[in-house]
Length: 97
Figure 1: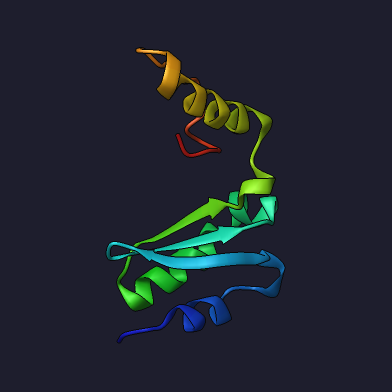
Figure 2 (figure 1 turned 180 degrees about the horizontal axis):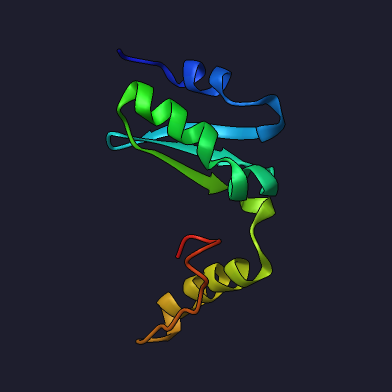
């Protein structure tokens, strides 16, 4: 069963505050502003995944990123120009690295 992005969004709770959805290869990427949904929304995502048989990546929207991840992105932009080596420290449980 093929679902469009709008169908996926309609199956999520309104409190999820979805800001953007897109395809990234064959995966569906969903951006949310709601930190609670980002942390605890796996049951809703799993229900959709089992129905549509596609991977769904849930990501935080840029303004809701933690200060640590914002620093990492800023450092990455600067270091591309000036640094040869980059080291990042991030918690894999709560943020993408």
